[in-house]
Image (tube, rainbow, N blue to C red; front, side, top):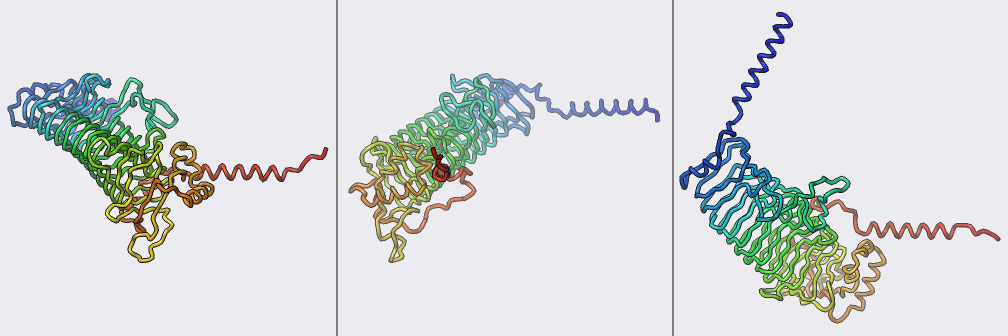
Length: 478
């Protein structure tokens, strides 16, 4: 067979292969998705073939919508991509992307409008949209097994993870603003579970509404992991919030149950709260692990504006710069918590005396720096744990001192201070625990930042070396 025959056979093979690929590709361009949605009978199922469909789509009747593997709805940067405007809608199997990037009208990848009661959004992916999923004034919506990934910058915020430019960081378009991963506005009994959210403003934000549950959700690289404003009867359970500016922010409203969450590595110098409680009543924090944050728990005005005091039980508050930052307005009860190796266990924000209670029904808390003893071996120390809070006040007022807080000089200052503790100390735990009973701390969840005392130690050693060299330097004889 000559060279010409070989070339001819190769050309024919290439043409046949290209034809096969064309035949195998889904005929998505010829499908009018909106027409399919409009023509579906109530209660029926609409299957969207694999392919990419550009536009803004509306589901206006109670149907089930299923995307075949590879089905993409793309808003091409305009409006909301998919709107649910009818009750009893079930949507699954879609990749939704490309809403408008500007906040006017809260454009979303998927938006459930008023009247979209009992919508079920599951097994979905949402990308590159201002809001990932929005639920507005709808009841009994379920969102589960969803992956939401945003992009852009947080307007008006110093974002510590993904700024506009920076060495080793991704450059992003300044015209792209981050919205929330999931925004629940005045919604009742919405459930969000088994969902992963990255690179958004707030992972899940609740504004007004009642009876919402957020559980088994993972949020990272965002402003606030979970953000609650004015909502009531809220439950946050078993969520994993790591590497955000703050973990859980509770403002106004309540009651709120925060249970069995893992909240780590919120180290922003401007926020960096594991849990922030501001003007919220009836906040119940139990069985959480709050570790490696700038401030593990910040409490201001809890219980003062309505509702019960904040209650913290069986939480592990470990290796944070400040374990608990209390303001004089804080009404909080602590029992069976583990305060483990925080640079400052408790600090006072502002001036005055707090209303905090450190022993509830005879049960105090575990303190890793407790120096008392348990002669009876019953797990309760025989001496009260008392901290005046003067040294911690200095550290809270000037975070630069955190670099020296674990050094010998500060330890001596604290020991002298406690010897003459005031009559009303910041912390007085009458029944301190000698064994840790709160949830265990997983070592691999702690960030790799160096211990806070290392900069102070380095500074001290450097000064000592300079003094040593100066004393050894021979004097010149005139």
